[in-house]
Length: 95
Ligand SMILES: [Zn+2]
Image (cartoon, rainbow, N blue to C red; front, top):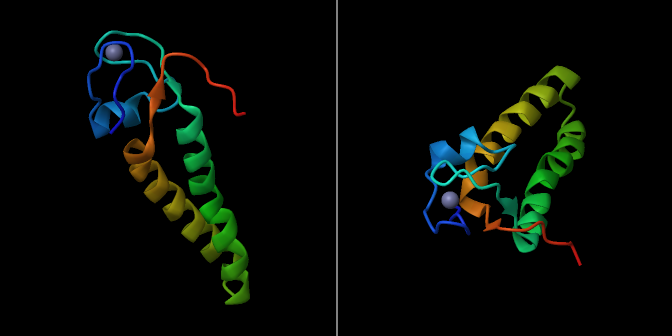
């Protein structure tokens, strides 16, 4: 789970999901950023559905089924996201 770099408190899964798009600490209210290393990891994470989809097509699933699987995957990834998320006080450059 992510730890706030401002106050050092660990966010719970639920708190992380709640603030997943804003990344605002529920304890001290400070804006947090995803650290560069975490962003690379989560980037790979978000690529999984894109990799799955062509495999899906290979099995001859209909567009509806593929879309359904993709949506399920997005929810699974979103659910796992707090486990890989690492916070930073400043927006870190990629390189
Ligand atoms: Zn905090």
